[in-house]
Amino acid sequence: MFAQFFGSYLLNEGIVTGPQLAKALDDKKNTKTRLGVLAINAGYLTAGQVEFIHQVQSTVDKRIGDIAVEMGFMTKEQVEELLSKQPQDYLILGQTLVNNGVMTNAQFEQAINDYKNCNALSEDDLNGDKTDKLDKIIADFYKVDGVKDPCRYTTYLTLLFKNLIRFVGDDFTPMNASVVTSAEYENTVSQRVKSEDVNAYTAICCDTDIYIKFAERFSEEKLDTADDFVNATVGEFLNLHNGLFIVNQSNELGNEMTLEPQEFVYKTAVALDDVAIDVPVAFSFGTVHFIISNL
Amino acid sequence: MTINEMSVMICDDSMFARKKLKDYILSLGVKACYEAADGEQAVDNYKEYKPDVVFMDIVMPKKTGIDAVKEIIEFDANAKIVMASSVGTQNHLKDAINAGAFEFLQKPISNDQVLKLIEIVAKGV
Image (cartoon, rainbow over the protein chains, first blue to last red):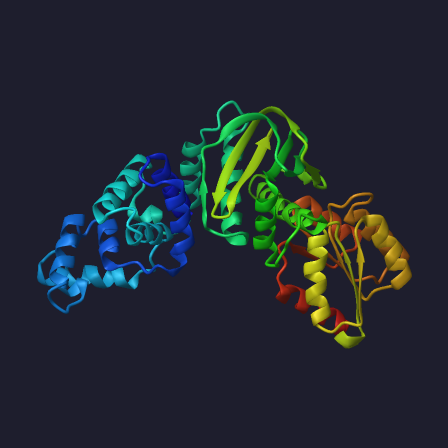
C-alpha cells in the first residue's frame, strides 16, 4: 500500500502530474523492475553510478549487475540479494515513471529518499504492509483533527485502502482529505455504523460513469447502466468493508458495533453531521469519494 | 442425499450478494435455489419450500437474520442454516449459535467454503 501513498506524495510535491500518475498506475502491471532502480532504493548505487553503468552497458554485452561488481560499485552478494527479493509495489511504480520518461533515475533517487525521510521509514518498513507504519502514514497524511477518536478514523482508513486493493484494484492515489458539510454527487450509497456511543455515517459517492466502473471492478461483471444491481454492488462493498471494520473492533478492542441497511440516493444533496471528512481516492477510471462522520 | 437432489435458499438483502452466491450454487448442479431479500420473506419461503440448507445474512430490513433463524428453527428444529454475514462480531456469533445456526461464514465468502458446507449437508452429518 506504500505505492499509493508514494504516488500521492509525488503528486503533492509536483514531481508528477495527475495524468502522468494515472498512466503509470495503469502501465505498472506490465513493468519489471530493473536492477538500477532496486540498487538506488537499497542505497547500494547512486543515480549517477546507474547512468554510468548504462553507458558502459551500451558498449559491452554484459549484465548491469556484472558491470556494477566489476566497477567495484557493488558486491556480488548485494546483486544477488536484490535479484532474489520480490520488488515492492512502490518500486514498480517508480520504475514505470522512469520508463515513461516522467522521472529520471536521479529524480527517483531524490524522491524516494525524501519520502522515506519525511515519513521516518526504513527499507524494512517498506517491505510488506506493516500496519503500525501504515497507520502512521495515514494519520500524518489525513491529519484528522477535531474528531472524537482520530485513532479509529486511522484504523478505518487503513482498512479501507487494504480492502480497495483487495477487492477493487491497486491503481489509485489517495488525495488530500477535506472537511465537508454536505455532499452532492450523482450517486451516494451510505451506511450507518452504530454502538452505544457511536452513530457514524459512512458513504461512497461519485458520478454515474465512475460508479458503474467501481461496481464492474468489484463484481467482476460487465455493467452498462446504474441500475439496482450496480447500487447493490457498490452497497455490498461498503457493507463488506464496514463489516470487516466492526469485526476487527470487536475482536481487538471488544467494541461491539452494528450496521444498518444501506441507503441509496440519486442526484440529491446529503446534509452531513458536524465534522464530516471527505477522502477522495483517484482511480484510473475516476475519483471516488469516501465520506465519514461521527465515527 | 446427493448435491443434485438438494435445494438451497439464499437470504440476503443485497441483490449482488444473492446473485454471486446463486451463480456458484447453481453451477454445482443443485435441484433448486430459492431467494429471499429480507428476514420476513426468509421465514415465509422456508415454510413454503423447506430447503435442505439456508444461507442467511444478518443485517436485513423488516426482520434481522438472527430473528429469522429463531422462527425457522421454531418451525423446523432440524433446519440447516448457515449465517453468511459481513458482521461476524462476538455478539453476532453468539446470537447466531443460540438462535440455532449451525455455521457462521464471514463475508467475503469463498466458493470453497460454500462447497464444503453443501457437501457436509449432503452427507447428512
